[in-house]
Length: 158
Image (cartoon, rainbow, N blue to C red; front, side, top):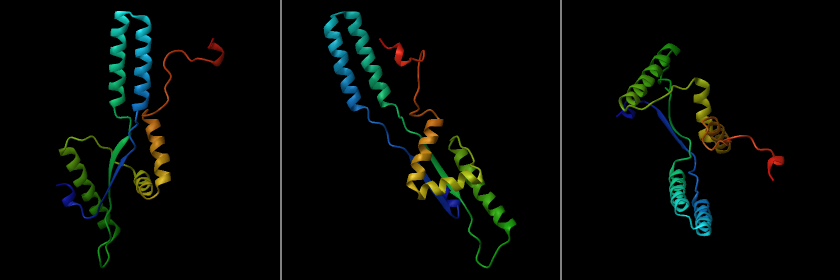
């Protein structure tokens, strides 16, 4: 409904690949099962089953950074049009988008002009887009390396 009102919508949908943890899960389950057989301890076996369930749930969680962009612009009218009229039409187009997204209850953020240009450039330049998606994913802590607990030095390993 919202897109019907736009003169020149330019919609970009960006989604990184989903990580595949199948091999890791198989290896983890085999390793856990061997450890459980080695100890023959019922509480440990129950904990191991809970751990395997937790790993399966974690592997199902999306590990992608996804966003949808609607870049709007207005082309000059045939016969010419002054800059003020173009800006008014652009503001009207943006109003349609914001009203449509708000009515769907979706959170949104209006990009500044530089971010809009970057989005369009990334659409046409795959290598640049990939590096910037990774930068954004890293900034959002999606696939970002994390260290839990005390930092471990090589000399700490015995």
